[in-house]
Image: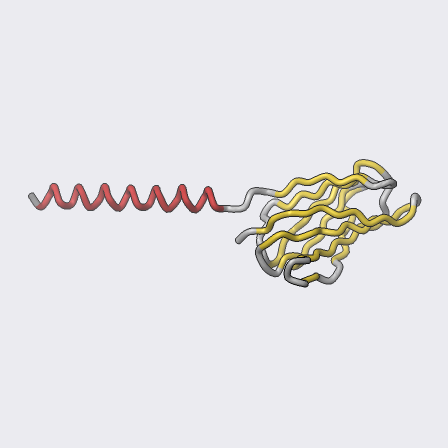
Length: 131
């Protein structure tokens, strides 16, 4: 009788652990991969871990020859905005920015300021940031 109780308790613990793992994995934020096009540039933004706090954002410029890229974010519904973060050029057309763009969960508009021989242009994409 005691062995059966231990077996049931072990089975219940394993079931609970699997359920927590599945729920935790399903609520994790999916990577953000968004493309936006303006009159001078086309940029794709990739955020592997879109969560509040410090993030790494990769920007690929597929149209236009950008020399500099900077990012900032606005949450219009709450009246929040973040200071601009400069992106470092890793190779021509590929930039990486690291910093705190999203201090809280919610819908954010990410502004991408690009500058190069074609001139300056600001592009924007909206994304949902979750914890």
